[in-house]
Image (cartoon, rainbow, N blue to C red; front, side, top):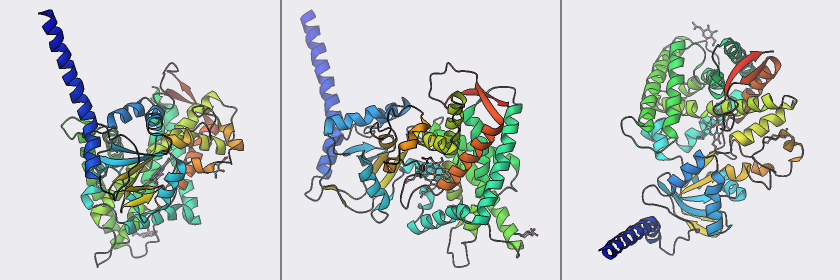
Length: 453
Ligand code: HEM
Ligand SMILES: *[C@@H]1O[C@H](CO)[C@@H](O)[C@H](O)[C@H]1NC(C)=O
Ligand SMILES: *[C@@H]1O[C@H](CO)[C@@H](O)[C@H](O)[C@H]1NC(C)=O
């Protein structure tokens, strides 16, 4: 009897293990068969489980702040080639861990599209308008860069950023309760962005709702995209619809205003620049595209500014003697953007580094591999602005904003903004952390009180 039970359990266990190992390989077999022609030559790697691929392992390492363990799995198992096949974000993909290979791809606009996962394009409203063409993306980049390169507009940008930051610090000092430092800095960063996107004549309540909904939009993007009632993704989609309504209202209002005013000067507000591209021949950005752009910029244009600035603030709290702002900003950028994921998608069949990759596959590059590389940055997890003293040797491994035609169009604005925030902070304020026992890396989960000095 007992013997039979042992037999039963043993065969059950073997059955389950076999099933698991079949499932675990099924994805790999599927893609090997699908792309098993002489035409392709894929790098080594692991396609993970059906449907989710390697996402669970990835998200876990991401959450633990230890992406290193994810990459070292590939390097130890599949060699130091720097390119590995995988299945992530719902698509067969190539992970690139070497900065030289990534830079090659970033510089090549012909063969690579922007490859953001479709569920994120949906939450931004880009999927619904058919995305932006290459021409439209270029035109958006030009407009954004205009804001920083036109001398008269630049001084303007500087002035209003100063005003917004000053006012928000004054408010923060008056607060009775401690506040999460990241959230505290998000607000002025958001207000500066709104000034660039829609100008400053917009109703305050509307801007407040936009800010609150944007926070849900972020949550919706940071996890698995299950669109079921109550899920973060579902709430994120709702947030986008609410934001789109507000932006449509502002757009309609602005059209009337511009239509009435024949003596209007050249605008430095992105929404108006986009409206100015519309003409009677249906050329330029239509309303739907303008709104998708506004939502996308709201998504891209302030959270990382707040992350970088509050990283610097929390560091300076513990090392007040460090006064070289330029180095603090670079070091904050290096640390705060260490978890950036760059997405690209092959427009054509791609020949690269001896491999032939099918059209439609994604290319994923992670700044972790460059910003946390101990060969470039000694003891990379340490916040140490002094490392910038003699770091001129390897600027190739510093990519906070990316590089090439698709790099961040707001890079200079962002640097300027972080610099304004730090300037006012250092001159007049300090923070006191009320939960120093928090084990989470600053600036996350730091509750602080702002003090005037
Ligand atoms: C410290 C702050 C910021 C960081 C670290 C940052 C970083 C990045 C990165 C890494 C990318 C992707 C580049 C690529 O794929 O090659 C990106 C894209 C983008 N960023 Fe930023 N960014 C910042 C601030 C801003 C600001 C202030 C704006 C707006 C004024 C902005 C607007 C955008 C837009 C619109 C894109 C998408 C561009 C496209 O699709 O072609 N960013 N950013
Ligand atoms: C028209 O625009 C100009 C500058 O762009 C501004 O000074 C003027 O007040 C506007 N007129 C009206 C009626 O809004
Ligand atoms: C910060 O990084 C930029 C490159 O991204 C570089 O041009 C600049 O010299 C660096 N600043 C310092 C102080 O090292």
